[in-house]
Image (cartoon, rainbow, N blue to C red; front, side, top):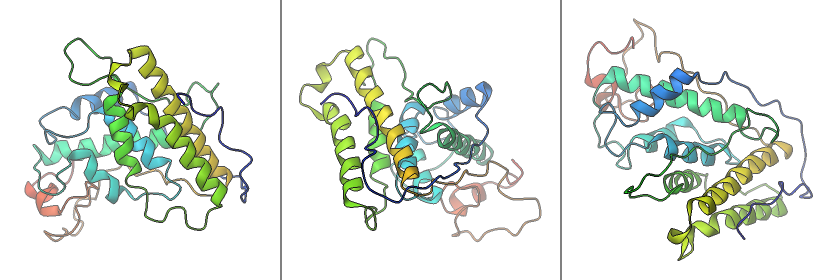
Length: 260
């Protein structure tokens, strides 16, 4: 079972509805390169996701049948250690957050498009050089698995049982090769095929939920978090920049960064 189904299971009964998915502006090449660079810089924690892992992570978050709030998924971008991490610069962090939000919006705009649409989302992964510790696509699939873990508990409640089972079977089919005992022996061409199958499944699942009348996540604001003169959050309040961290351990750790 190395290939995703040709399409989402259209025969699954459900209340279909035409939903207009918001189409935020796509990132510029400059912003894309800036995001790739900042995710491996000293601004973010050492175990911050790189762009490949982030792509898989956000893909899984966005194909959830129930929208997942940014406050829930954003902390996982920066570190597996939650609130017990530090950042190199409040200003740099705010820029990183805005770029991650912009990337989220880009996936939201391009997931589920027709295959012949050149803007249709495809999984992003880095080429593998000799001596790299990871196999091709390994970081992506790790991020995707982390995103799936964030799907709300009981997400299947109220949905048609056949729809739920079809999505589970689709995910099982395209993820199975990655967990096989001999997966590490697969060559790059084979692994690219596996990755393409997961990407096709993600696009199909995203479209399938829309066909059943379930709303997609909303685009995130990439504007500066608050205007000068706005009330300062309490030290233990969530930071308004959207990092998911407490204010005292994020933008509140440095003075003068609120206008970044």
